[in-house]
Image 1 (cartoon, rainbow, N blue to C red):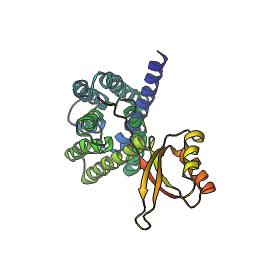
Image 2 (cartoon, helix red, strand yellow):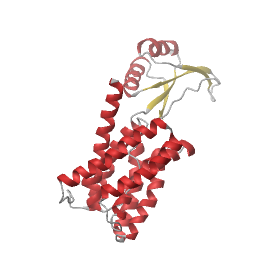
Image 3 (cartoon, helix red, strand yellow):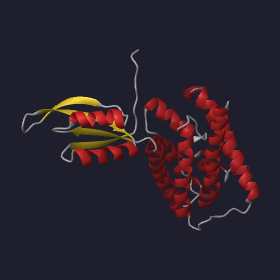
Image 4 (tube, one colour):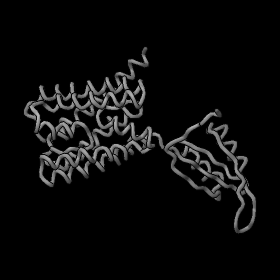
Amino acid sequence: MMKTVRELFVMTGATLIIAAAVFFFLIPSHAAVSSVSGLAIVLSNFVPLSISAVTMVLNLILLVAGFLLCGHEFGFKTVYTSVLLPVFIGLFEFLFPQNQSISGDAMLDVACYIFVVSIGLSILFNRNASSGGLDIVAKILNRYLHMDLGKAMGLSGMAVALSSALVYDKKTVVLSILGTYLNGMVLDHFIFGQNIKRRVCIISKDKEAQIRDWILYTLKSGATIYQAKGAYDGMVRNEIITIVDKSEYQKLMQYIIREDPGAFITVYNVSDMRYIPKG
């Protein structure tokens, strides 16, 4: 029960962040950046409805696709956030009826929107939820075509960005397209940057056993041993491979520099790890 309450609290906070980004930065810029809210800004020029009402209608249409293609857990969570999002936007419309650009510059507004909205979206995506709209399209592309979420958001968002040509000038269209592209990049950073680990490969001449034991029993991390043969001298040595987080990586490097400064080390960033049990 407490887990469910905590989950709802986190999703509510993330949705509030997204709504604030849309209302205070995206709407004043008039840019249609990678969201149904951006499309709603364009459509509100053609239909006698507020932006929050248009957002609600578009979200309801896409919610059906989310339920059918992404599962009930994703669907129920997205129902909650997609209903809450226009409610928050409507609340902001009521509280700030004369809303204008905070920065006074459309480019700066878009930059602020990209940064703020990516925080909210990454929180939702990491909990198998979304804010509705194009996030659902991105999740479908991610699930069935295995696209990174940022790239999926960018692809689906380009259509929305180009729709701004129906209403606004060329500068706004270009700003929408660039904003959509950057939004995908920043979103990927926030999603995968939280989970990045390091794959450290170590070859030691004399202290392989000592380093291996330190990783296992002091650092309390796993390790794998491979045999590696040098191309120049033909010597066969063991290569220790371990995957560690940021703090463990710093401790490991400090230990190796102190105990075996001559060790050969290569490091790779790892953003996804999966254990696939035998069928």
